[in-house]
Image (cartoon, rainbow, N blue to C red; front, side, top):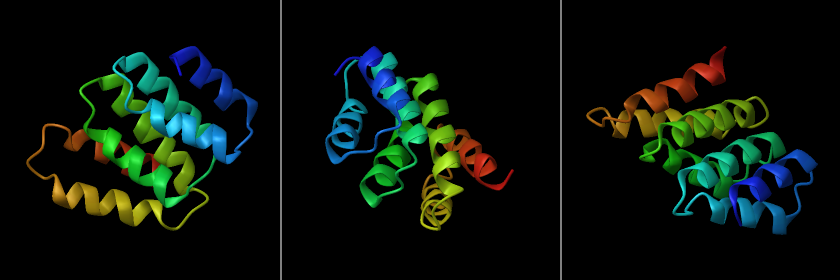
Amino acid sequence: MRGNAAWALGGLKVASDGVVDALVQSLWDEESWVRGNAAEALGGLKVASDRVVDALVQSLRDEGSWVRWNAAGALGKLGKQSDTVLPAVVTWIEEHQDSKYLGSGIDALWDLVK
């Protein structure tokens, strides 16, 4: 799935298993703009399943800053509806204290608490 398709699926606000699966798969696309659109779309669907949360948390280490930013924003949106997101982000921050991507986890945490 390409980035525009990921963005369009998220805009539908339809959280079927097929849509969620396609978007999670798109988080591993070779193109960062596709990954970023997929992260944003997942946040818009508001499906805080373990699979989605885990994939977005992993995206906090993406090489693309826009992907990390969208993943953090998506986790912030999902965390407003699920008690599992905040502990996952806090654990990620604790495990990545020396990571150059620590700021992404802090951004996600900020989105969760603001």
